Length: 83
Image (cartoon, rainbow, N blue to C red; front, side, top):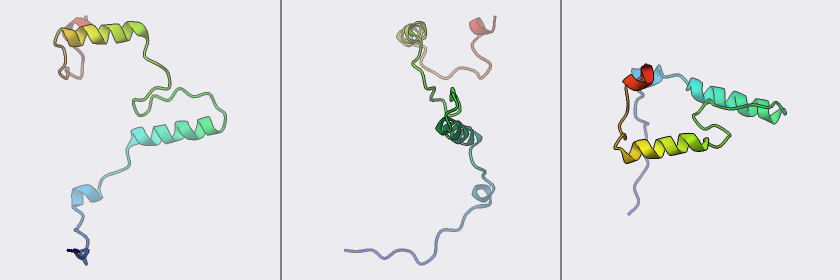
């Protein structure tokens, strides 16, 4: 059985209409354009660095997960890291 497409699109809410493009994605696009021009860029814009995570960071992350530290932390960081 085929369904017919809706004749009218859903109305866009005021909140959605006020949304702007992601500044993180804009930074990523700028970095990509610069790289295409031959400029050496370390792109940290979208959380996807263009280099591998250092081994000591990988080991620390694995140890933290093994210790049950798998939840989000406060945005200001954990107490030990603040000190």
